[in-house]
Image (cartoon, rainbow, N blue to C red; front, side):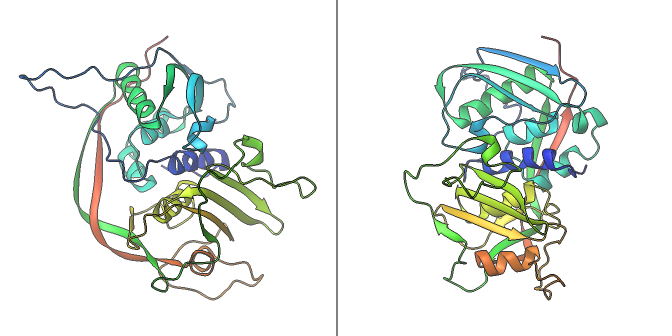
Length: 309
């Protein structure tokens, strides 16, 4: 499975940056205890799942771009079901690639428009549980997972105790814009006052330099989000934290997008644009170190095309 188009990569980036830091993943089919009754899983008040018209593009609602955005009423998202599952179960891109590698083409490529209604105001984790319920009911999803020792990319500070200039502590209560066109694929207008973008910003600067901005993210979640937008070399192994930093930051990274991350620091390219490896080191003060650690293995046991509305 590859995610080469900008829109598909953007959708995964939204899923990546909306992950709840430190939230333990949930199993798809929890076993029922014969002795103790369990509460029914949360479900949407109403839900519609339909194949999107040909040529439709993925779409993410505001709460997937910005974890603090309120979630209420009618919401719509659009994308292939593997991305919906990835969001619901908080899969890193490397975990998703392994889980869906042998799934049929429709799982990875067919765009579905999912419209759902919630009662009152709910949290991101409650929505995830509702999506898991929808996946089990409409797509007959069954999956299981386990953990084993394996290869990881560990985020490390280049110099202990020193943060890069583009890694700023997130100010509590800071205002930001949730407008999609202000954060996705469109550079800000220099003639208008700028406002930080909630969640992430993603656009190209002159010379083909990719600008990625993230707000209110831990350092390791910010690097995981880069893997979500298809940055080469970040999507092959799970990304683990080796910094011990749990604070939230606002992050800006600008680099040559066709470069791949490596565990070395190669010379600058001919036009002076930083490679991803250089940008991580120079702008954020971090590097990736190959190592071993716990790796989450997700197995799709069963998945069907959705039942009709």
